[in-house]
Length: 160
Ligand SMILES: [Cu+2]
Image (cartoon, rainbow, N blue to C red; front, side, top):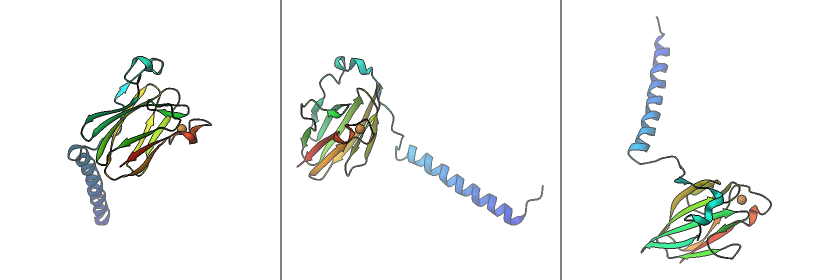
């Protein structure tokens, strides 16, 4: 079969580009450990009271590492406080592991000025880590429309 010279160059160029894309994907997974966000576990929303989410809140794991267990529900983030829009305080340089689930409908967490954007689905446990290197006020915001009180779903992280 005859292939024109210019056509052959284009075939080779396209092959090289696709090869580079494939190599970039493989390198990002193997070398840099990039992976798709995935649930860390499953949980029955009706049995949260018998689970690790029975007492949501902040725990300190080590000097600069904290875990925040959180239940999203219409329409607040439950982190163990009665406040409708709770606040937690962390020292600068803290690494916060957020372990969260939803009690009722699809919610989400977006951490202001940080690379965190996670969906919270009933029946699924989501986990994400975020480093608060600079002092400031950072809001955790529900980014999935979840009903008429959605805009009030805010928690605050005060980093000092
Ligand atoms: Cu919402």
